[in-house]
Image (tube, rainbow, N blue to C red; front, side):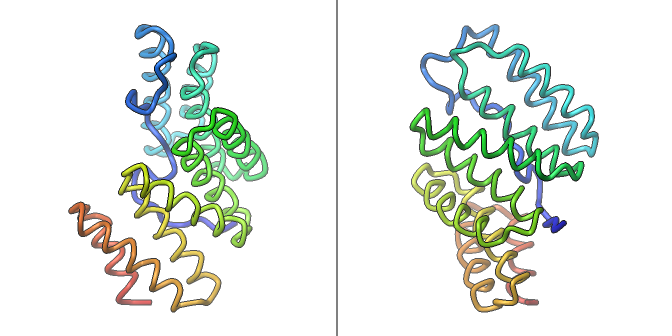
Length: 201
């Protein structure tokens, strides 16, 4: 199992109302789902993966049919919690289901989130070639959507995959691309991490 060092929030995604659809459920129902999802992410980042999965199950039970965004996040965050628990095949299945949902909804940004989540599960299973292709697509979609932090994350992961695959030139190129974006946005944690990778690999 290959686990990559990821700054928070890693592959987890909190509920962002701006990314939900106009037909999303009523505010009260949406807030219940949002609280459970965000609580699940918080628990996962604290290492309490069983608690995270329980909270995400609560969110799943509260979902309404008109909330595909909520369903996407529950599925993606479950996948990442399962990766952390070492249940890699199930994690990959969950992330793949999220990607199918995003494509069915014809939302490029949602698909990018799902590509990223699926790539992380695939890296953990040693499926680097598949993950590389997904991360390339995700990085381009995040650039179009203006999501600089996940664009940086995608380049960082591509660099890590290249380094593991003994391709230091390609790794350096991805670290440099990610570092340039991080500097533009003043993301100091990413600047420090990518500078370290770029200078010492």
